[in-house]
Image (cartoon, rainbow, N blue to C red):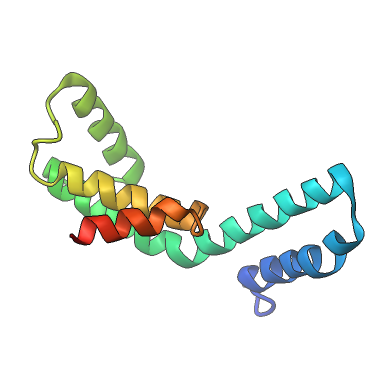
Length: 126
């Protein structure tokens, strides 16, 4: 077991280095790649922070929709198959809410500053 620094702390340190030290000194294509790397690390940070809760919620909703337990991967595969077969539709109680919540969680991790995320959340509250 690692005591310190944690995975999260290591990622934060590398991202901070890229953003605060490296990127200001880089130009052109190299600066672009450094920004992409920093953004990727920020996604990993959010995944570490928010991912477990999002996955637990997704799995619970899937178990309720499908009526049994399973791994997140297996439940998602079953959901996709049921939607393709027409066995589950947007009229199925809980499906639209599940798809909405799962999408919002994924966008919050991947692109939390996406302007449509706040709009979508505010619209859903109405």
